[in-house]
Image 1: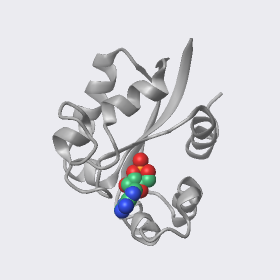
Image 2 (image 1 turned 30 degrees about the vertical axis):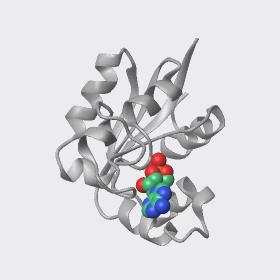
Image 3 (image 1 turned 135 degrees about the vertical axis):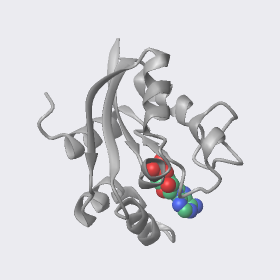
Length: 137
Ligand code: CMP
């Protein structure tokens, strides 16, 4: 059964020229693009996206980072897209958790500047897709 997930290529990924690399890995895996857009994120959208992290020590730094420059938002789809993209991304901590061969394991060193975001559950995917792409049917 096909499902959809939200992917962000964060400002560090865009600034480092890794958009093509990330999209290529998604496509080579067999997932497809349902939406793709370069966006400048408002504080409001960032706060809604990361609502679950409000109150955590890294929250304000995360909001500052995600609004610091353009990012690429995408909706990707395919069988088990949510778990498949999380595998492509690797664990949140690029050094302690992300395996070599994953985007974070290959390209990142910091927990915050970790190149990509992917929805972590069906519920998150539905909420995040509605936030980033309200017009998508
Ligand atoms: P992401 O998958 O987008 O989900 C929440 C983000 O918060 C995460 O990737 C990191 O960018 C950031 N993050 C999570 N934990 C920490 C932490 N301990 N310190 C700094 N940033 C973090």
